[in-house]
Image (tube, rainbow, N blue to C red; front, top):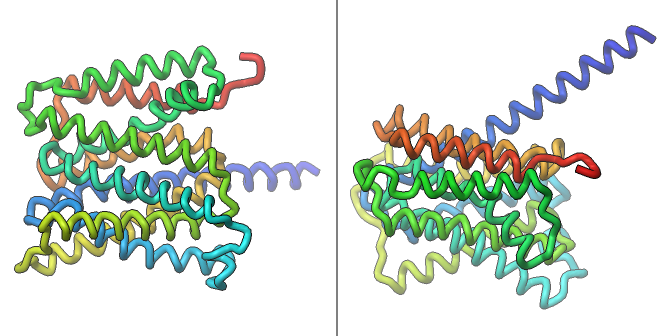
Length: 313
């Protein structure tokens, strides 16, 4: 019996280590997307066109996960149980999650450093909790309320904390914050929709819908893919579209299944941390001391907002 208990304990520890490794891999890839995006934007690739092509390729990559999850049969991608209203909800999620979130984020990154863009985008758990309270009338325990206040204070510290010395404009910062609000809205729509669609099938459709919408807006707005990109730039685009998009989402969904949404979301703040470290290493950019302090406050606020509260607390 002692041997069985020992084996069980070892299995639990191994499972915990694997879970943490999946989380680190996912958030590291998420963080790297900001660096890749900034490099391509600096090379003259238009923001909306870049995001549109990025998620067109990422959507095709998601088909591999659809096949892994349940096969590529038509019923997996187009379940008969979905109504016309359900498909409208899928389209709305795509327009918000891929179209608005990523479109606004990359527009913001033309004017603000990658670490700040990541910091602002990943405040979304704070806004999810706030919007859920306002629109879904969800309970707001004391610790989550404290997390909201702390997160909002962190945002106030991070926004314009250095007067633009780091190359960040007020407009870019507000657009970046807008991307986080759109992510929160997409999360609430997804939560309310309760779609009978596999996780990866939904990912495929929302990425494809958002990508096509962005490409249409980009071409109507006169954006064109630049000529003269180097092999290195194409390498960064490939990284951005596959490992940093499809790969990071795949690992993130694996972590969600193993650890649950509440526990897993508390680690989301690792992504802007990795973005800051990679940006410093590859781009030479950094956050000011006040922005770093704001980031710590936001991280603690996210942890409190997503903390799994015990019954009766």
